[in-house]
Each structure stands twice: as structure tokens, then as C-alpha cells.
Amino acid sequence: MSMFDTATATCPKCGAEAELEVVLSVNADRRPDLRAGILDGSFQAVPCATCGARVRLEPEFVYFDLGRRQWIVVHPADAVDGWAEAERHARAIFDESFGAGAPAQVRDLTEGVAPRVVFGWPALQEKLLCADLALDDTVLECLKLAILRNGAAGLTISGAHELRLAGGDAVTLSLDLLHGPSEAPEKRLDLPRQAYDDIVDDPAPWQALRTATGRGLFVDIQRMLRGAGDEAQAAPT
Ligand SMILES: [Zn+2]
Image 1 (cartoon, helix red, strand yellow):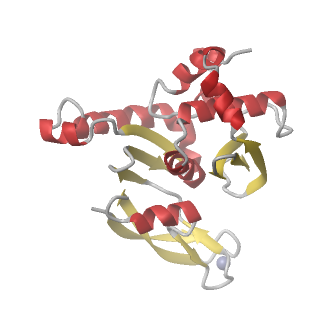
Image 2: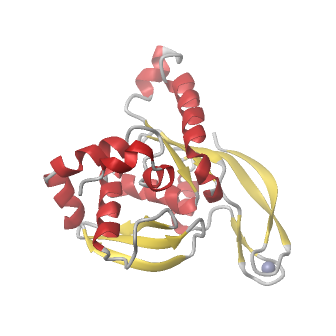
């Protein structure tokens, strides 16, 4: 079941208020249209009645897609600094719903469902695209770090910028460069998919980083860029 409520959002351009239908949970198996709306950016967005600019509510819901084995707790982009607590909270809900505390029937049905925590629309869209493109998100995070490292994006590694998968196919992966929590991309990078396959084919140098990014539900290099600590040491040099 997908659940809705209404909420008020402020137009970023003129400040007028808009009322939107806001989702509390998304069941993508039953509502593939909601999944499509997340991917094309139309979900929880309306044109401002006063100036026409796009008004979009930040996400705050649980996304479930049994068919694609995805369970994702989605928070607003600007809540990312609280990732560690959000991760603990999501883990507890997941374990209670589908883990040892759940009925055997439920555990059987949901076996292999991967729990995740994301912040903001681009990060959610990225996880959905990973499912469509059969990408392992821990490998994708390694690829991002490689991009940041070799300076292809003209960037230094910091928490200020984010790279988010925006599309792709059998030969190309497209990533958007975002500045902070804003969802307006500064530029798009098109990479050969081979760059991803190279990491899969030669996993040893990346193993520590993959383990570090995949140790919790927040599978994102932001956990290292923002959180520092011992996880930052896991990246190959
Ligand atoms: Zn407006």
C-alpha cells in the first residue's frame, strides 16, 4: 500500500505556497507510476500557481519494491549529517519488519531485500537506476571516488559536491555533479561503462572501500567524506 497526506511547500523562486499531495510510503510493486515519477522528477512536484517555477517537496518516506528487492528509507537532502542515527533507526525498523522478529512467511518472502538509507531525490533516483542497470551500489561508490580522485570532474574530494547516477545503458553511465543538497546539476559526466566493469574485474584494490561503504545501510561515499573517522582510510591510494 502507498500512503498519502497533504503538505505545504514554498516556491523557491517567488515564495508563494503550494499544497501538494505528500507520500508517506511508496509500494513500487503496486504503484509503478510512482517509481516512474521518482525517476523522471515529476513525483511530489507541481508548477507554482504564481510564477510557474517547479515546487518540489523534499522526500521523507519508506520506499519498497519487493520485485527489485529494494527497501529504502528516504530522508530530505539536508538531513544527511544525521546519517549515522538515521541508519541505526532504519536498521531497527528493517529488522523488526523483515528480520528475526518477523514471521517466517514474511522472512521467506523478503529474503534478499537490501535495506538502504538515502538523502534527497537524486540519491533515491540513483538507487532505482542501479536496479534498472544491474549495478552494485558499492561498486558505483568506488567509481565515484575514482572520478573524484583523478580529477575528471575538476574536483577535489570533499563533502561539498556529490556525484549521482542520472542514467545509462550497456555502454555509458551518466553522472550528475551536484553542489551540496541542491538537486540542480552543475554538469553531467558521461563515462564508459567499462570504468565500472574495470572495478568489478579487478576488485582487490577496492575491497576495503567496498566493505566500508557497504557496512551500513547508508551505502554512499558521503559517509566517509562527511563522517571521516577510520572509514576514510579504507580508500586505495
Ligand atoms: Zn513561484
